[in-house]
Image (tube, rainbow, N blue to C red):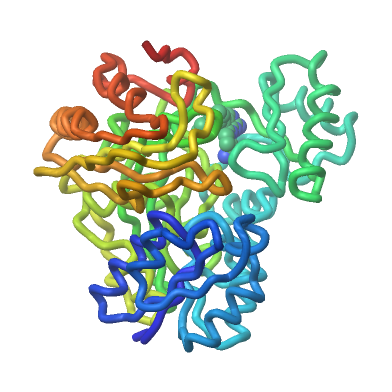
Length: 445
Ligand code: MV4
């Protein structure tokens, strides 16, 4: 087992990894930017190294500084958390070449899923359902036009280097195609330095349901159930839950098998997530794979009663997994607490937390790095914590969430708490009647 893990991240996920490492008897090294000097991950780790200035490029994305910190502290593994370098193939290979275990997949595995056309081709070969569409890159506008006629409108164009919605265009009819093609290409080139596009049939009012998987170094893969992440706003998830209210035992079996095939196809090692679009007829289609631990992993942890960070560390250290799939034992919901003003287009609201009271009690988990007097820096993601509730049934998990949200006091900055309070009382949400378009018509009172 590792003796010392360096955590190449900040905020709640850095704390999350420190907590499990401590339980496993592993020492931890925090790295931090000058803006994060007073952060909890710096205080709670066994050692801490400043790696640069506030801007991510100068610190949390600064590979030479992070590797130097690992070397001077004698860390034998690096946990990348999520975001920052978590899905950076080069970083994974630099770690491998430096004799420091990257707690995550290899560069090859990251690359196999990083290019979306390659990923889709791999999935087709593996027998995983994908959204119908053209195979390969769009060669030019004429090619796009004939392909769109073949597929049938509405269609979606996506960037092969994309993910998360950037460079994506929905096109309802041919008259809109040329403008969409050109603007998507320009956007993709600017965002990813790769203007490659591909085309798919548009799946209307889909749900976003993802399957958590784990694979070990010996080729064994299992799935750990689903998370419904349909409550999103501009591709930012706000609420996640498991099981999905839309799930059936049959669909879970089929999606679980497909997710395992997807992971096996690239000999995946570590924990990861296969994202699917699910239409109203319960047809499901591979969308992308996240080759990292995700923000919403806690929902799965509560539902199957298992520590996913521990699983990830064990796999990286060469332990074998059982290969048994997990079944949901409980119902869990997660609300993302962001320092944003939900009454003002979710505009970021950094600054000092003057008063804080975090909720507790039965069925309540808070994963957060905030404290009274903490100053939320403006340089990073606005998520300041996650509130997770767990109960026997969905209704009870929602009721507990409402109660916990009512106890939550954060003063000094605006937060998403009022939004979540209203959502937990919404009849359609309570009935499980929602898809990825739900928030487009949700009005905050
Ligand atoms: C789609 C789609 C409908 N049809 N693809 C959004 C992010 C990126 N990962 C893929 N996305 C979508 N791809 C086809 N063929 C609808 C979306 C989509 C979406 C997906 C998941 C969660 C929220 C979403 C919000 C808008 C659009």
